[in-house]
Image 1 (cartoon, one colour):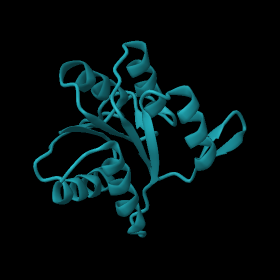
Image 2 (cartoon, helix red, strand yellow):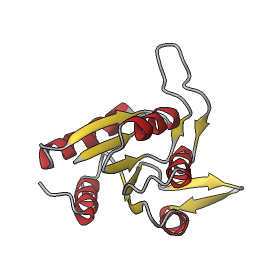
Image 3 (cartoon, one colour):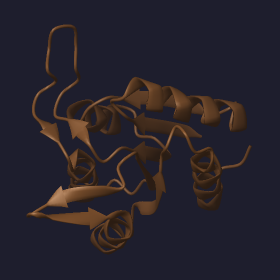
Length: 152
């Protein structure tokens, strides 16, 4: 099983990788830290599963670089790319935000889940709220991955 973890925040990325590594030690895990690097990985190393953050910079952040324009919905750009090029790979969104501002209002996670289900029915498989102070995210993530059919 090849997994792509698209996450720009190092502590969160390391937490996700740790959980996946302990539960799925035989899986291959690659990483992307921006919309651009995620699209590159999808083109060059198509995974069997994508774990996708919603809020991503346009480009990878390097020493002394801002990483391009931050995108509150950068993950949606990745999903749109997948749809455009008919890349049907299961996607689980893992976000640390409880709501997202859009058009002067807040989009709650339940609404985001519904929107992603409707807009990306072939790829979107779940949404996990990541909170480093709450261990329940690990169980939610593992349940979502196992529901897709990934075995230990």
